[in-house]
Image (cartoon, rainbow, N blue to C red; front, side, top):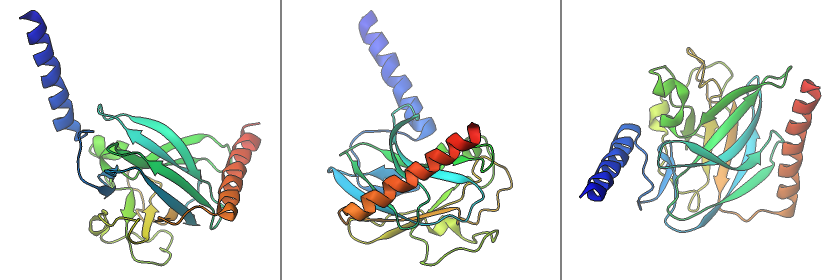
Length: 219
C-alpha cells in the first residue's frame, strides 16, 4: 500500500511539472518552431549562417529539453562566419531547442543564452516583455537594425525544413527588458541538404574564430 501511494504521488508530481511548465517527452507529432523541435524519426538538419546584426559575439547550439524543463547541451552548430554550415541529427521522439549564447564583444564575458523555444526564456518565465526570441519562417531578406518587428507571433513555425528551407531569426536581447526586438541579431537557414566538405570547413572555422575571440579578450 505504501509503495503504491509513493508511486501515485510521484506520478502526480510529474503531471504537475508538465502542466505548469509545458514540457513532456511523451510521443508527439512533429514540431519545428517556438514550441520546440521534435521529429518522429531520426532527422538531420543543416543550418547555414546568414546574418549577425547584433552587438554581441554569438554562438548557436542545440540543446535537448528534458522532462523537468531544464536544457542539456548537445552540440555547437555555428559561429559568425558568413555562409558557414553546421548540421545536427535530431533523435526520434526527443524535444530540442536552439540556443544562442551571447558574449560581450570587448570582455568576452558570457551574457547568457536565449532560446528558440519561447517558454525557456528568462523574460517569459518572469513575466517580462519580448519573450519570443526567435522567428521561424519570416520573409526572406535582412531585417533593419533597431527596427522593431511588428508581428512576431505570425512566425512561430510549423514548416518542416526537410520539405522547405526555413529562415530562423533571433533577437539577442531576451534577458533584457525593453529589448529592441528587431530579430536580426543572428539569422540562419535550416534545410535538409547534406553537409558539404566546404560547408563543414567554414562551420568549424566560424566556431574557431568565436572561441579565439573569447580567449583573447579574457587573457
